[in-house]
Image (tube, rainbow, N blue to C red; front, side, top):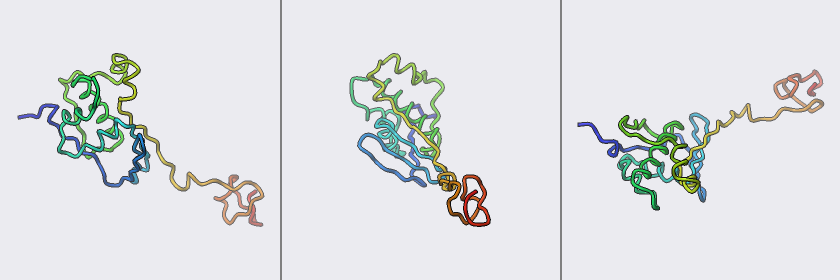
Length: 161
């Protein structure tokens, strides 16, 4: 017997991550992919409760307010899609094809500006590698190897050319 889409139990990935909780968001740094993710309050709420025991329906109950059960469930699916895209879930949670979910844009249009606050958002940036993050030395600055110089040339007197 196949599971109904409300019976899927998403599981958040926790290994290889550095997590910093802030007042209204959670910052997650993926040490394996060298990516930083910022989860807004709604996305963080869902991710923190993806423990493999809660269904999508149970996760939807975490959202408060006057939204319908269908709207709350749609917010969970949006969060799960973003979390999966950011590799913050242990495994993919496929949305059933029979589910006629609204896109993020359609949901905002239907719900109005007030809904923008509740829509889960995961923003991702790629952190530069240490070599990319370093600065180079300007012409006339002391150097020991050419790689230190912006010009790429450390002359014979140990100054960047």
